Amino acid sequence: MPQLDRQHLRAGMRMAVAVSGGADSVALLRTLAEAAAEIGLPLSVAHLHHGLRGAEADADAEFVAELAARLGLPLHTHRVDTPAAAQAERKTIEEAARHLRYAWFRDLLAQGRADAVATAHTLDDQAETVLHRLLRGAWTEGLGGIHPVIACTGGVILRPFLGVRHAEIRAWLGEIGQPWREDASNQDTAFTRNRIRRELLPQLTAFNPRIEEQLAHMATLARDEENWWEAELARILPSLLLPGRPVRGGGRAVSTHPNAGSVGMELEKLHALAPALRRRVLRAAARQLGCALNFEQTERLMALCDPEGARRQQLTADLRAERTPRELRLAREVAADAVDAPLALQLPIPGEVSALGVTLRTALRPDAEAAIPAAMLRTPRPGDRVRMRYSRAARPLNEIFARMQNGVDGAARRTWPLVEWQGRIAWMKGVAVEPDPELPFTVEELPERAQR
Image (cartoon, rainbow, N blue to C red; front, side, top):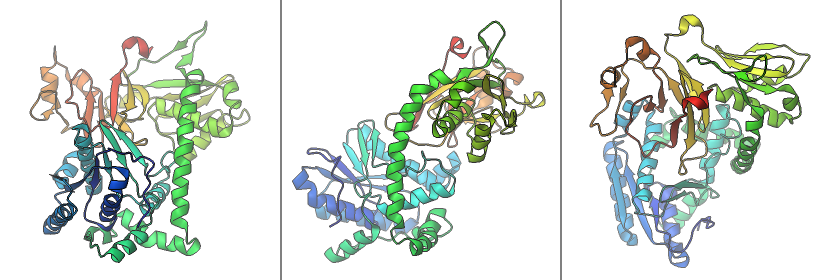
């Protein structure tokens, strides 16, 4: 029998086991059912129909229902329209399916129908995730891979199989005569994840037969180290980052231009930091201005700290770095002839950025995963629609602007600040946007006095 990670299992925990019908989730259910009496776990089964694969998915749902009935377990079912969600939110089918799946899991917890949801992610899944992120150029925060525990409102999402190999699972199911369902889409190498699983990892195994275990170990190390770094940065950043630029006579000047912002760091303090910490501080400074630096840009900024090197660097189209005798300064500016052009800049999560006449601060919700894609602070675009609180449907921006007190003229509309995340508008200045309980972060507009 596959080895369960029991660290987060406790007597009396009402556990909903997410079962798709595939080998991993079926094995997780059978393993938990074997251990439930010993641990004291009241179990149920949760199956989501994604609205994909037609009759094949219907057969998956029937299979899971029959398995739950045979084990004498309650069944939670839900159906979603993944293609419609993908189109509406401008996501891939995979991204939309994952979002809808976890939204439902969080609903089960928030509604008190379960204390925990268990998903069947394995060591193989962890290795694929780490390798996928590595190929995309992830920093250590991305290499943490799949987290064993996600805290949610009303409970937790657990991954008790993260230390188990997929081959071990299939072998055990064969031994006990337990069938499972195969998802044909897992064979489609048009998906990057499938190419990694079927083409890249087998080649890497020829160099190291334990490559999956090594990648999983890397994820554990990265998560632990990232937790430490986040706490360390939170401790020291307030004493290192100086808003704006110094002015004669003391104090600092902060630009009020909607498309500009700057931050300074004393060179003496930067030089006192170890390279690893200095690199993180520089990246955090750029994030405050809404820019996510890649490795090459970060190294150019590191070199700028050297008094013998260059004094100026244009890091991105609108992010400039300059070294003065006392400070290293980053400034984000948009050319004058681009003031009325559509603007979009990254809004880190968690993080803070000032642009378009506002200062916004984001914070991860307690039930969110540790690492999620950045949001976007931007100006309106044709076709934008926003769902206001108590509104039955999303409304065009022009209609919303017209209804706002005193109205909003055309010039102001072009630079009106919005926050977009994963294809949806999550915040809009002066508008009570319909709250989405599944949005993994909050947006706070800081008062005017905090922007100076």
